[in-house]
Length: 298
Ligand code: GLU
Image (cartoon, rainbow, N blue to C red; front, side):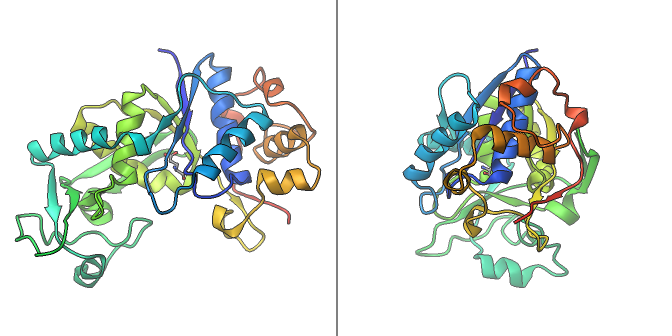
């Protein structure tokens, strides 16, 4: 089976070094395996996504020497596809409308396990609830109790207890927009992606995505979650902090080779010497990638 990977940035800011490292490593993994690499713009959130950031990310990737295969997928143009997936889940009883507000969920959750996704949903609307006048529902995925196991190429096995750590999660938001979890699962499957390399911040979302894949009859890709780049204060680099972006580095006179060499060095793939991305392809193997986070000097 041909390796097919992807980079799936959200155009909510300029790409920073952490995003670029995921792009570089995902690209190297695909190219070193003789595979394909797709680019998907995760611009589902109309309030946060900006066309100028999409334009900039094409330029940034090209500047770094990373290419991609086939047409670019844009989530903002694929709403009907997510609606179909939701309809399929609703038909099989795996999705239901939820009339709770975020505050109500937070109040009702006893001993909440609060992860990136917020507290575990206490199941208020699970067995049917009357519509609230003047409000739209969100839609939730109905989970079944048990444990979900995912094998990650860098982290080994991850196990989550479905009822305790996941709960019924939102797959369509109140504003009608598909959730990240649903869109990512549908798009990875329909574009034939079989290798997903991304930042470790998404590791805890992966079991949710695996549950959705199973409910929709999709295969589970091979996952590799790479450690994050951290700022000196231990927080992860984030677009909103204006952390080191290509634009910023270019303004400081950095060449693409210097950026790639630095990213490779932080990843355990070299000593930081400037290098072209394609020169790293022959020596690349995922096993060589560092498993510890890197603190980026500022
Ligand atoms: N769009 C997500 C982000 O930029 C990445 C999604 C993924 O790789 O699954 O953080």
